[in-house]
Amino acid sequence: MIMRKRLAAGACLLLAALAAGAFPTGAAAGEPSDKPSPKVELVLDVSGSMRTRDIDGGSRMAAAKQAFNEVLDAVPEQVQLGIRTLGADYPGNDRKTGCKDTRQLYPVGQLDRTEAKTAVATLAPTGWTPIGPALQQAAGDLKGGEATRRIVLISDGEDTCAPLDPCEVARDIAAQGIHLVVDTLGLVPDAKTRKQLTCIAEATGGTYTSVRHTDELSGRVTQLVDRAADPVATPVATEGADSCTGAPQLKAGLYSDREKFAEHRWYRVDVRPGQELRASVSVAADRAVNNDYGVLLRAVTLHGREIVRGQESGTGRTDVISSGLRYPKPPADSDDSQPPAETVCLQVSNSFSAPASVKTAPGLPVELNIAVVDAPDAASDVAAFGLGRGWWLLGVLVLTGLVSGVLFGWISRWRLAGRTN
Image 1 (cartoon, one colour):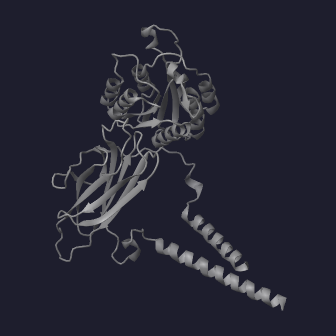
Image 2 (tube, one colour):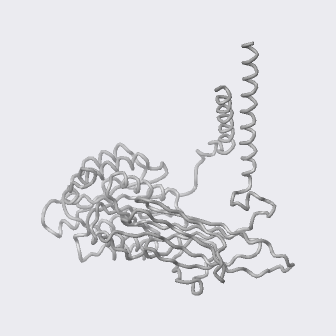
Image 3 (cartoon, rainbow, N blue to C red):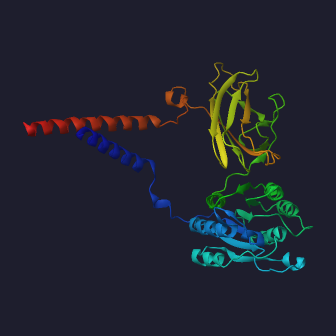
């Protein structure tokens, strides 16, 4: 018993030491940044259909309010956030008036959480669904500056104000070159709603997510707001081939593609001797999918021999599933200053399937990250197993902690035995 306690104490001391060394102090955390504050506007559908009670036993509006409260609590301090509504004010039947029913509920700027929550609490399902006009106004709300800009649109139905097509509005926004991304979320969507919201997102490089539970809504919106606060590089669109022979040649960078359900796609990357290929792929489940799925990333030679693979599987509803691989190419034996590069074929496969009621076109969003760097030293045995340099130090610390625990246990038992005698 005493030895176990001493072992536990040694392990705790080791973890504390590791934590102190692994995480930097917060001295620089409060330093000002020259980076402009990102702007996000949440656009919420408050039309009459939001009264429908089919989300966790309550109405869609109640789910949206609860999710918004959770999202507002989690907004990063550096994000300028605003809220716009559509269909919240006009309950009548005049189409012309109903299609102008969009207003800014909370202005884009530094967030006052109490004030924003109070504004959200006043909302009640009311009228039409003017998605197109709301997107136009939201784009205007976010104008100015060089900050990252993002619209998060939450709706339970398609636009009711044609001929102003929301997809055309989204394409116009994208054509302005202002780098404004529109992400869409469908609350218990039907096929038409899903198609329209997907179109809006695709036009601006955003994402579409189907939502059927309150926690899914709050989690996804929070994720999108966080993404605006810490944006990633804009992917370059590419199109994989059905074989390595005709596959696109990729350099280091971030790429986007779409892959059909259960499809294989190929890409090519050149790797010189002494370099290491690091590749990762993410496939987004942007609609309802069947349980049990996976993604496979393989590196293969031009002759079809597999070099290395990475794979991941999952079950249940997941937004994204990812896998990766590393391939270090040994240095050339010759003195040639420019040894020829090896063409590596990358195969991306997925095992997603969908219920019969779900439309499988367009394919699933794919994001492929390619890096070609100098390979680790051949003398590093740890690196050969895919671990970064410096992990040997962690091994030494772990071994030291275990030995210390054992010694403490032996000494304690010896002292206890001496007292009893």
